[in-house]
Length: 115
Image 1: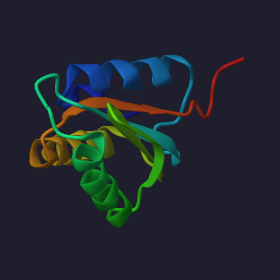
Image 2: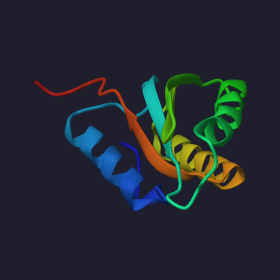
Image 3: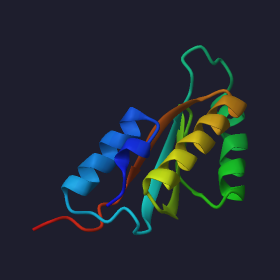
Image 4: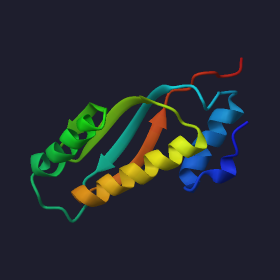
């Protein structure tokens, strides 16, 4: 069993705890989505905010799930074990800072729910 105490962000740990509670195997690759939102103070046109971020996500192996004036989400097949989750959040927080947007977290498919 994965040591969830190794997960840096409380919100990430909460998601992983829920997956484990449902009987999921955190070492299973699954559909994962990441979300970014416009900062309230950002007056730039939506294309100027999110098109460069979309290009960077694609370059890193993500596909664009949703793109609109106030946000973007990327989709990829990823692991969600503690180390991978820490890496994901660190990477996405750095992208948010680089592109001047807010990282709004991630979600993933449940792969092994108990019956």
